[in-house]
Image (cartoon, rainbow, N blue to C red):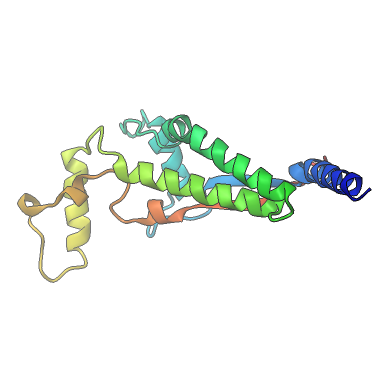
Length: 175
């Protein structure tokens, strides 16, 4: 009789987890209202321009999300499998499982951002970075002495990189 109870208990746990799986939503990306200092540009706007490029601003695409999703989906599926087993064993919640996944996805997007080197920045952009830095320094940096960090897209101020985040939110779609 005890075995029968355990089967029913496990079945109930599975049904309960499935019933509430859509109660939460995982979001990974940039907060739409986070702006760069002295600019109206948001980090979400920079993310869109990085992904798609901007003909108007003559900025080539430097995709982050699509290639990362393509490369990392198998790894993310394994995380989901592990977390589902924990949920079914009563060792994890749906919200906790999504949080674990969100941490991994955001970290993978950040890693991709730091790997992007192509297409290279225009020399005018690099010179602008040198000028921007020299506005606040007593000892001026000469353009001839710039390091690779000045030439690397998307990471100069670290604002874009550090503002990438994830959230697990209550799903309010009325399901």
